[in-house]
Amino acid sequence: MRILLAEDDPLLGDGLRTGLRQLGFQVDWVRDGEAADRELRAGEHAAAVLDLGLPRRDGLDVLHAARAAGSRTPVLVLTARDAVPDRIRGLDLGADDYVVKPVDLHELAARLRALVRRGSGPAQECLRAHGVALDVAQRRVSRDGIDVPLSAREFDLLHALMRAEGRVLSREQLERQMYGWGQEVESNAVEVHVHHLRRKLTPALIQTVRGIGYALARSPE
Image 1 (cartoon, rainbow, N blue to C red):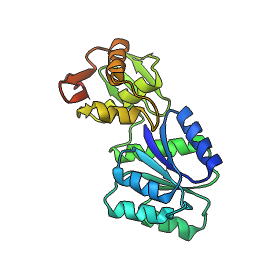
Image 2: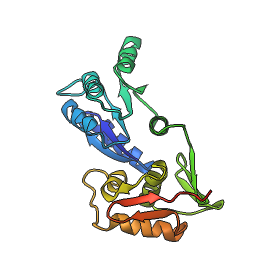
Image 3: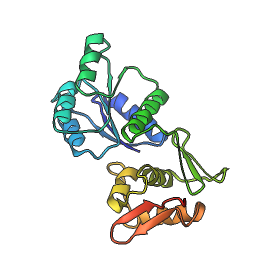
């Protein structure tokens, strides 16, 4: 799951990025409001963590402008401003959740997963298809009840396809889910990971749509 982190404090930002990566997130970190506004408008992240006290542009202004421009990216506001009026204003301007610093890393991760689930429709902790079960919170995958070890990239690719519910995703869309900024992407990375998933789980799980991309195969009736 690829998320945007907008935080100007270098120690906190680095700690959050490192910790969330260890919990399975791909984290793109920006340090000012102008960059946060640009990335929110681009809409390439599953969710965003937004500090309010950003340089160059206040976080609330960024949030308001993004919503006015039609951004639907779920936003979790993370801030030291704990006064009730500040929280109300943030929620009224379009925040989906509001957490006061300091925050437990595992709670932050759980809240981000909840925001993404809400944005994708009915909440689902476990996705299933063709005898394969994917536990979002535990980052575990099983087939017919037997755990199947996957790499972090394989898990993220499978998660993206299972959340898409049969829609075709291009190679570029899948790469954005699997890799953050500055991470080297081999030209055939998606193809290799799809091959590994078919071998580890079941060949019928993922369909290749020639010239377009990949989709999760429909389960038989």
